[in-house]
Image (cartoon, rainbow, N blue to C red):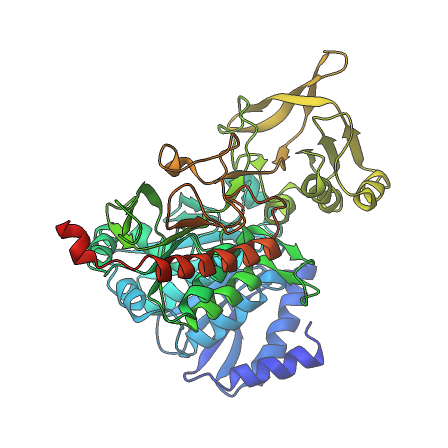
Length: 528
């Protein structure tokens, strides 16, 4: 199962085990069970603190295995073989059940340990999902820190009957105590906050006590991260408030155009960005959604940003880098069947549609790439492009046309997503040339029609373009003195990671220049 190099690396990790752990395996006669057996038999000799035995109970999924701390009720379970994106989840589970300390903040650890009640989680993942490991690893860690919390992580592609029965059509999907509880990427902090209902009030109280920042960055994507780093390097007080650190990049699979990095993946890049920001004295406030901008009364005086939880942050200069989100079609049925056949991440949810018929909406690069990826998993792909021609790079179009299970429809306007019994069963579209109406029977619709800026909260307070983008000049200045903007939320063309990073750096340098030229004694300003 594991090559020699990985075995050597794993063995070095297993030297960090502090307490004995037991691998408890549940096999059946399948090929996957044999693969699981091989994996566990390779893990056992890597440390004297690891033992392996076979599960006797019939009340567990097969193939599956538990990782238990010997002599305790602390442990986690994987149903399936956690390879692919979940291999890191396996390594972390082995280490943490074995007593190796987590890198989570002490505040979050104490919050987890104080949770009351019994929480039995079941987390459905796919091995190609880049968002799933965040949820799997968070719930596994919580299981280690609090014995009242249990988590079983389930490979949805391996347990298709169960997925069909529960109508799981998007991953990660989390069940708690047998009932649907959450879907999509969630950080450890987000999961804990959802369980601890008083956490929002506690956060607001802490935030309201913070001093005025010299630079406050709103948004934690590539633009926000680079702005925070460049500001902090100037030695000025810097804060960053983000709804989720990493933003849209966390949902990106392969990244091949970041200069000097031939290939990386979104979650890896987000982790690297966050670690880089933490190298500096930056106050990172995650899970904070901006709700209202209150501009300063005059240059140099503090601006205010009101957050959704009721707290208010103050700063003498701002860098707005709130990024963008997937654009929705806005047709009947789209919202109704979201995560019930309507999806936006082919890498995450594609394996759940194995052998089925799906449509991809959009003929740009993202749409064509999605169709190519899905064609290797699903039974048939129909790509629908609104325009008369696809807009993707020619090399991608050539690859798409070579696939036998793909149909391409141009000049097609999707008018409705249809469904039955709570899930998608097809879509209606209009041929824009002939005006004819058509219906396609299918089980999934993947929407890939671009992005929309996250700027609704700024309307009426700052100048926006007709597309809702923040209007900036070549110094990243907005219509409000002391407020700068960068990244996908702005009018700067070409929404690329490398461009957002450069724009974030420019915005921070412009903010620093603004502070130098507009030094104001705050107490004098208030008195005036």
